[in-house]
Length: 58
Image 1 (cartoon, one colour):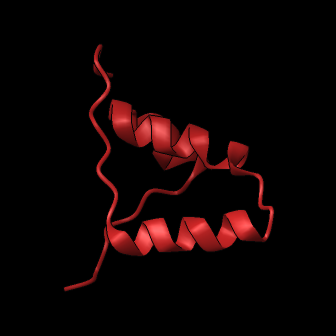
Image 2 (image 1 turned 30 degrees about the horizontal axis):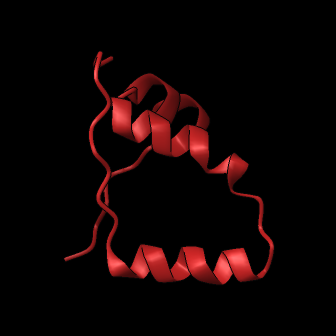
């Protein structure tokens, strides 16, 4: 695990999805641990709890 978290840069699609979810009053507390794990490079948490997988998009 890294000692210093990475800076997370979001893309427009994520920002728009987050905006829609906020309007629906979705609780973002459930997303924070996954985002922190991504920022810290904690692959153990991602593999076990969030079932990390390879992306297949182009």
